[in-house]
Image 1 (cartoon, rainbow, N blue to C red):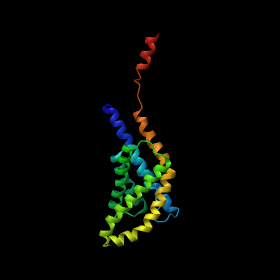
Image 2 (tube, helix red, strand yellow):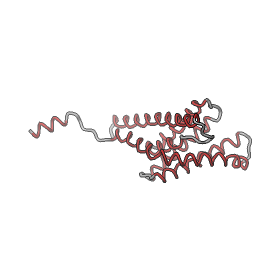
Image 3 (tube, rainbow, N blue to C red):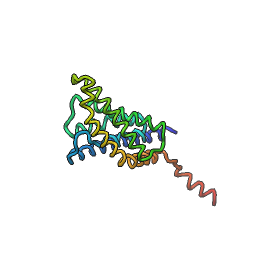
Image 4 (cartoon, helix red, strand yellow):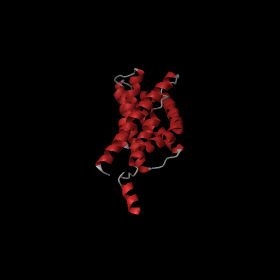
Length: 195
């Protein structure tokens, strides 16, 4: 692939990163405005599918961006924002590596991956926040269980419903850049040779 094509692919991935991040944060803000309980959020399907479509680095960047933007939308930015954002970045990174192992995903597999990544996110944030707030590991685990159940159920359902469509859209956006191109001068020349 030449330099121009590489730049075009990178530009498409960056466009997806920002579009998916804004859509994820906006979806979360809409869910919260509709009265969704704590830990019911739509970040996971967006971060996971962007990592699957664009790769680990873009998944990482999108996870950090989407979560930080959601905190900003809600007016919740604080000392915890870098930790929760980095945790979602880890989710996007892990999803990007999952893609290198498997290229085609069923709806059920995407929901299962979303569930696994939700557990990863909740474990990382629990281990990060517990010590910072002076809780023992046992107290952190006990306090995390109800939030993880809510987060796990909502993320799994949202990944089941949204992830196949998001993955298809993201892949189509990226494939548009990778499509073979014909040189505009080649058509008239080929036509003249036939004449």
